[in-house]
Amino acid sequence: MKVIKRKVDVSIAYEWHEMTFFSQWERGKSMVLCIGTPALIQQSLQAVLPGHQFACGSNDSYAMLVPLVDAIISLYDHAIWSVRDTIRIYEKVCVVKIPDSQ
Image (tube, rainbow, N blue to C red; front, side, top):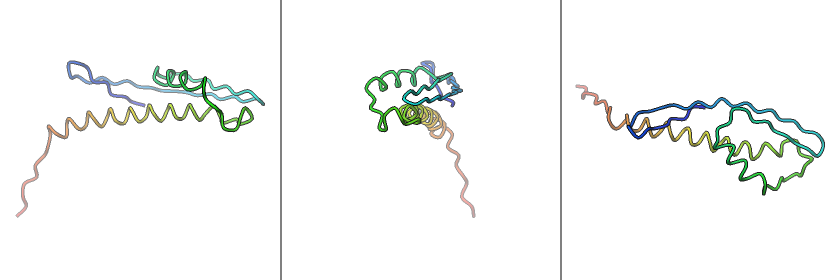
């Protein structure tokens, strides 16, 4: 995932996130190992997991993935909007006018 970071001096920097996830489930116990996740996902999971009510209880092997996927979607949303804002600047500056055809 690529996130565009705009600096104070209006230059553009890029931040890449290559994340890996490993999920293990044993009856009554679920674990997800997140590798390479940015601080935004870590903070989101730390905030939501302590109070999270798992819909199917501890017998659902996918229950831990719900808050993780929510955090990933939020990060993708942030990444897409960062690209959009940067592209919009160039759209305003680089408007190409097509001559009238006769």
